[in-house]
Length: 313
Image 1 (tube, rainbow, N blue to C red):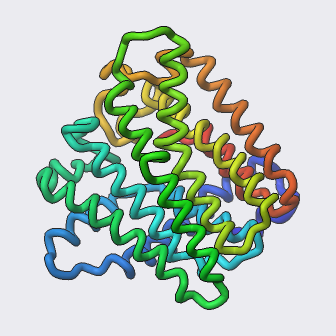
Image 2 (cartoon, helix red, strand yellow):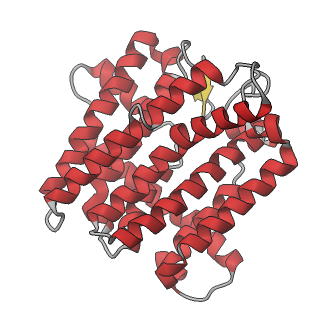
Image 3 (cartoon, helix red, strand yellow):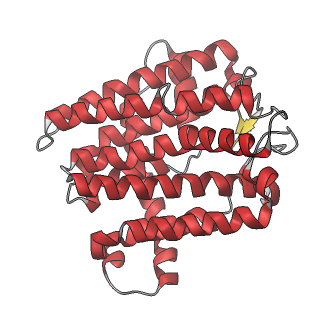
C-alpha cells in the first residue's frame, strides 16, 4: 500500500490510500504494543494500562516515528520500540489530562476515562507506569542491530525535553491554570494559547517525527526541515481540534461537552471559526512546502498534512 505514494497518482487517490495506509500501520503498531504490554502481576495495573492504550487511538505519534525513519532512509521495524514508547507517553498524558484535577472528563473516544473505570488512584499510577516504561522502551532501541547507540541517547534526550517541563508538561500546566482565565488583553490571551498548544500538542508530535529520523541517521538539514513540518502540522492539528469541538459530531469525537462550554481559550473563541479553518489550511500548505526537499518520498507526509484538516475526529 505504501508504494502508491511514490508515483504520480492524483491527490484524491493519495488521500484515500493514506486512510488505508494509516489503518494498516495502526494494526502493526497495535501488535507491537500488545507484545510489549503483556499482562503481569499486579494484574490491575496492567489492566488499566492496557485499557487506555487500546482505547482506539489513531496512533499518529508512533506513525510519525515510523515515517521519520522511512523518509530518511531507515527501516521502520528498527524504530518500533521508540514508536511504541511515544504512544505510551501520549496515552499517559491523556489519562492525566482527564483527571478531576485537570479537565475532569468522564469519556474519551466514547469510553469511560481511566479514573472513571478504575478510580483516581489506579489512573494516576497507570499514567506514571506508562511514562516510566516508555523510557525503558526508548533505551531498548540500543539492542536493535543497525541503530547507533549515540542516536538512541539523542532521542532519549529529545523526548525527555519535549515531554517535560519545557514541553508537554509545561503546556499542560499553563492549560490547567490559565486557559480559563478571562483576565488580560486579547493579545495576552493569544500568547497564552500559542504557548499551550506549542508545548502541549506540538512538542510531542515533533518529538515523534524527529525521533524516527534521528534513529535513521538523518542529516542536520533533514532534521531542520522535519522540525518545521512537525511544528506546522502540530499547530494545525490543535486548531482543527478546536474547530471540531464546535462543529464536529460528538459521537465520532467520543466525548461530551466542549471547551467553549467550559470557557477555555481556544482558537475559535479568540479568532472565530472561519479564521481558524483558514489558518489550519495555511499551516498545512507551509508544512507541505517545508518537506519539498524529500522529493517523491514526501507523499506520505503531504497526505498526512491534508488529513489533519480533513479529519472528522
